[in-house]
Image (cartoon, rainbow, N blue to C red; front, side, top):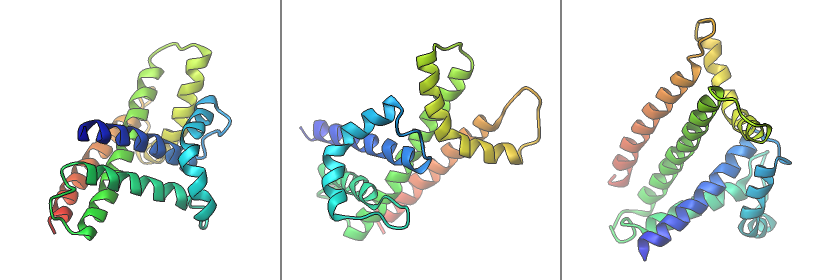
Amino acid sequence: MKALLTSLLTLILYGFLLRLLFEVHRVDYYHPISQGLAKLTNPLYLPIRRFVPSWRGVDVPLLLIVLILQLLIQFAGPLGNSGVSVIGLGLFAVLQLCVMALNLYLICLVLVVVASWLQLSPGAESVVGLLRSVTSPILMRIRAILPDTGMFDFSPMVAMIGILVTQSLLRQLSVTVLYW
């Protein structure tokens, strides 16, 4: 029963994280996927938004929901009865959220790269355009640093390696923080 609850909460958390990434990267709100994600997350988001305002362009209610969901996952999982300090659990939750956000970036990058090899229908190209709007800020910064290699673009590979290394460091740091 705990595994089912944890899986359900994780799925909901990924939905809210995706909404957060869409807002951070100013993805087209009127795209059908953005609209669907908003409709799925609004029942929890809108009541909290009434009481917790945004602050300086930061969607504080969304960040609060993501943090609370991550803490619920930890308490439903094996960390709930482990005797770890509340501060340690809070820092662990923040680090795990960073790892999960990087997972979403990695998935988006892989999908964009695979889609670049294929000839897609207009509907699928619309979805890839949405994913490109999430990944392009990172890739543009990397392309500005990398030397021009002609028709080969190594920026997705550099981004993926950077994400994997960062995830590994965050996981090691989270274990250290947990038992601090």
